[in-house]
Image 1 (cartoon, rainbow, N blue to C red):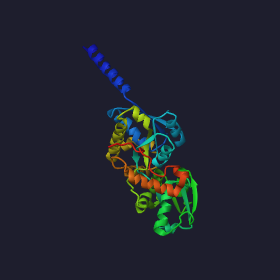
Image 2: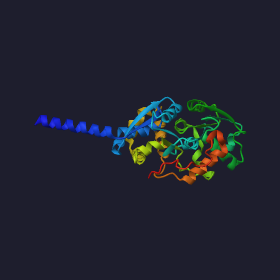
Image 3: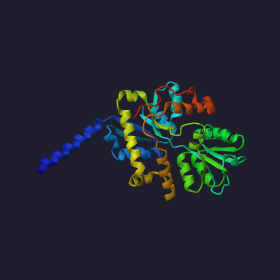
Image 4: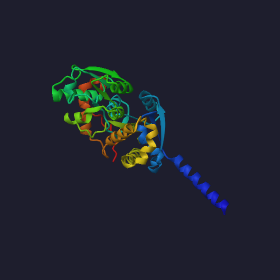
Length: 321
């Protein structure tokens, strides 16, 4: 009897393994310390990939350039990027499509003891900016300053461009009147006492843009989904289930804490709060609202930023529900 039970259990394990092996595989190119890993590792650790009929493999790379090369060269099936970059690639002939991921965006912070109340108050000061002169947060804040205060933010401040960790460190050190950084570095800066003067979300709303349009997305080659019907919706369902879990489960966040690089409880809490705040509404992206944002980016950044993608390329966003 024991032999029969053991054989039955072994047979079930082998069968389960065979079923898992038969599932389509999504190879995700990720940064080794990227924040997207929080969602993707939740998917794999909780078995949400196999629940929705696929197997997710995370492949770590050193930088964004390497993840893009991996997808282009078919060494990976997807990576994360802002969809404006993806729109440029699609307009240039690449068959990339986007599944929405996050609407987390940056903002501008000032030292805790700063007397600044508006962007006008940092005129003549130095701004530390992560991402370079074409950083989308910087461009939107420039447009906002011009509209709200008739202020040329570029001409009336001194800009220091640098890598996010450098802007983080120098900002906390008091080297700048204000700083613009990627959302997760901004979360840490706020946790360490810096104050948000204006968020990109607030600026975008003032400019007539829809802040609910997610800027970040998972991008794939459309041919990948053509070869795997139904997989786009399956991946999106797993992504949304992970988001729902992380929205209200403290244990899920504790499991992620070792990879979050939080230097304190305050940083951990701020990172969690801001990540959750970046969760977009479920459903398809509003194409008209996205086109309006792209048009503004084309106006502010020109061809250097958007290439030939001055309007939203047809089929950019995958239809998911």
